[in-house]
Amino acid sequence: MLQDCMKNRIYFFGFFLLTTLLYVGGFIRAGFWLVKDDVPVHADAIVLLMGSFPERVMEAADLYNEGRADGMLIVNESMVPYRHLESRGAKVIRTTQQAHDAAVSLGVPAENIAMLPGDARSTIDEAQAARDYIGDKPGIDTLLLVSSPYHMRRSSIIFNAALRDLPLAVYVGCSPSSYSGFNPDKWWRRREDIQSVLSECMKITSFVLFERRGINNRTNE
Image (cartoon, rainbow, N blue to C red; front, side, top):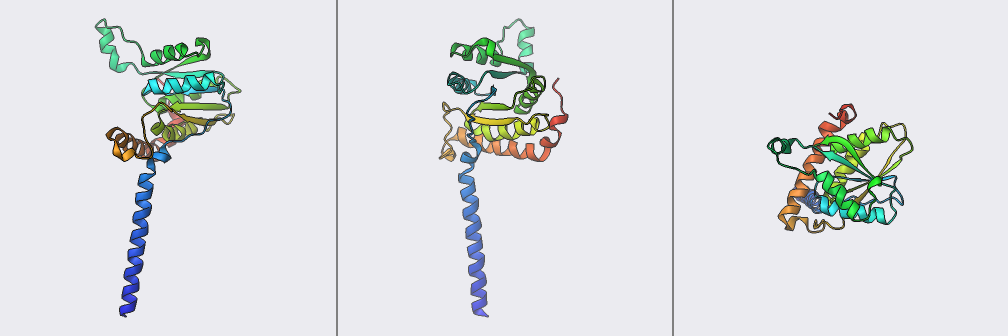
């Protein structure tokens, strides 16, 4: 009886230890999981996602100049927060316009950059705008997303969901910016990285549970 009790305790302790190690190991590797890196040999277009655009536009320009894509897509972001400034006479330059101008300065021909309508407030809006553009451009079957490293996994999930119903299957590659300061190996040591990882994990969960099902039913305004 005593031996059975001891065995049960050992089994319980072993199970608890294994579960803890798996949990901690997964927690530590969350940074690596978020950084999806999958650059195709050649893409029809680079999709430059908005956000920390300096690090992203440099990566996108490098890829274009290496011959990794034929062109670049940028979705115009929402200007709602700035319209009060404009109504009072202030001149506001869109972040997307700044990204466009920076890409041109870095060697991307302006005629090879498509500025897509969308009034985008999120990555979902950007994916939908890209889907609408591709729907009118038969033959596009490979996109290359460029964003900050921690944003790549969620971007890939969203774009794959948005593009899944197109007549022609579209491959979605990922190129995390090499100019980012994000450290997936020791992300828990810096406040900015902690915030990025926790935020992305929550947003991925929200998308998978609540938003993915209706992504192709939403329309851009």
